[in-house]
Image (cartoon, rainbow, N blue to C red; front, side, top):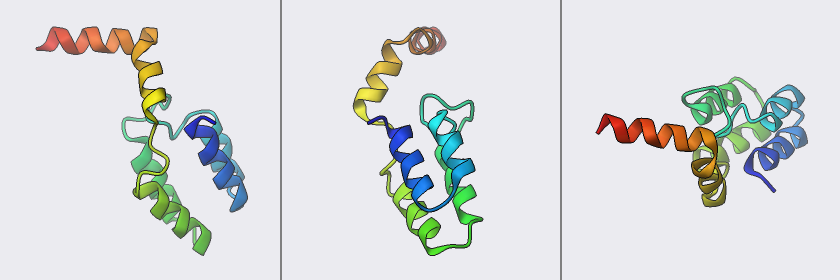
Length: 93
């Protein structure tokens, strides 16, 4: 299961349906998000939720449990976006 879907599932379990929907779309994903720091955003949003479940999930996020996997990283690197980014980075060196 993709990391974004695992995260969405965990958010649904603790009753955060709006955040779960964003997670499922990749909003908090290392490679799919439009944000520069999606995990930081997720940690910040979870900090605003006043429940023990959100505090626990926030700590799991901080611990890296919902960071992209190596397979997800490799898929992004092989994608057109990943290839374009790699070319851009290589040009800057």
